[in-house]
Amino acid sequence: MSYIQHLINEILTNLSHEKKVYMKMLRGSPEGGLVCEKNGEKKRYQQCIPMGKTASGQYRYQRRAITERKDIISALATKEYARVALRVINHNIRVLTEAMNALLPMASEDILAGTRKTYKSLPDSYFEPVRRAKATTRRQHAWAEEPYTQSTYKPEKKTKTTSRGLRVRSRAELLIAEMLYRYDIPFRYEQVVMAGRYELAPDFTFLDHEGNPFYWEHCGMMADPDYVNHYLWKRKTYEGISICEWENMIYTYDPGDNIDMREIEAVIQTKILPRLQAA
Image 1 (cartoon, one colour):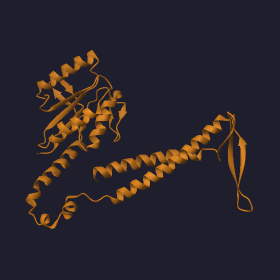
Image 2 (cartoon, rainbow, N blue to C red):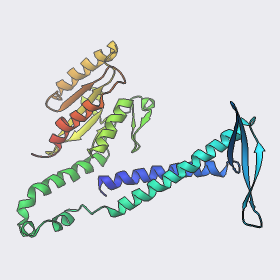
Image 3 (cartoon, rainbow, N blue to C red):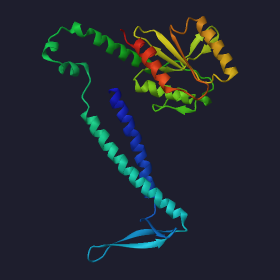
């Protein structure tokens, strides 16, 4: 399944969950709808309940005064919101399902079949760079899905959950993870790295095109002196095992829950993507 298909499936799953929520709202809502009559500055609310058709085929309604019944007014407002939300959700499900069915297959043989005749006749060796790149990508994704030793430090601090179910410690880490998903970049979160007797856990670990790991630490509390001191110790400890900035470690910073996603995207585009595939 391609990344686009995976993303559409995730959206469809979320829409299906939302649809169930709104359908439940409708099942528990009062009958009829809300009518408002104005008399000067005053508003009078009525519950308009359908009573079937007359002999001539016209619809009949019964109106109940509910101006003082805020609970019923609120329930009818919720019912109307759920009705419109369901209409929107059903539309989006239909559009996305049609888009999913309209997607073209992206396997190598399918892409090669779409090339012009001259290119089809070329020996396979001319497409070797493409095959190497695809093989590297498959290897990196397989690596990211393998079991690994993840940090067990204060698991109760992992209070944020990404769209793929990964629990992380901060809003900044959640936003970074979501951006990595968007670029289809495989990673491991808080994989343990031993530095002598110390157990370190870089926020994100990646595998470059040669199969070597490199790391990303987002330092998100740089306004806290204690945090800065710990960061300086950790950085020195990393360097003691040859994990160094500009070689195999990327550092980004913010003073505390003030992450600049433009900077994060620039890091991904200039420092991560180029290392994932051979030039």
